[in-house]
Image (cartoon, rainbow, N blue to C red):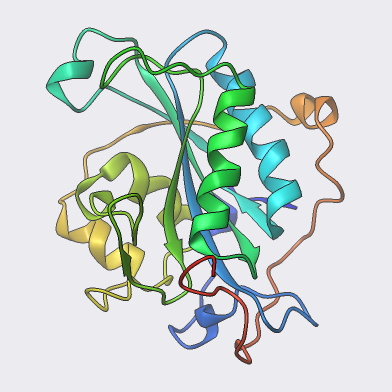
Length: 222
């Protein structure tokens, strides 16, 4: 697993074709998956670390952004506590439906409840991108339908995957972020001592890339 802060993330440069990978050698049959994390209830950092540890069991070659603190965006959340947000990018051969189900199971395990829309949550995991899959069903839309307007998603995602491409618009994550005229957000770096508290595996020094060779990441679970 790799944790990238502002300085190291700025050194990760890829072409759009290369980022079809975000792969490790021998990872053919998988595709890049982007997940947004958020928490504004209880020990927010701990909830995000919990989510990260579980995502490492779901995805391979996981890379994690810094944490940022943001104000609630929707009117229904306006009275809630500040959010802590992050982004994770990895690889998987599972379908979007299967990935969504697994993310929801992690949210449930974190103690998340949904008493009403916009309620404060221990952990929110949004499936943002699954390779170049475009899917629109009543229960699942991929790419995430609102991620292009959300700075709290795009800002951390651009730290670790600036050249990941939105298959709907053809724009990179960095280009989508630039369109928002982004504000200056408060960044919270990972605390190194916390890395020992969750099973993260070895920290890699760089991302290795290769092009996808097909297979994996089926549009549905059938």
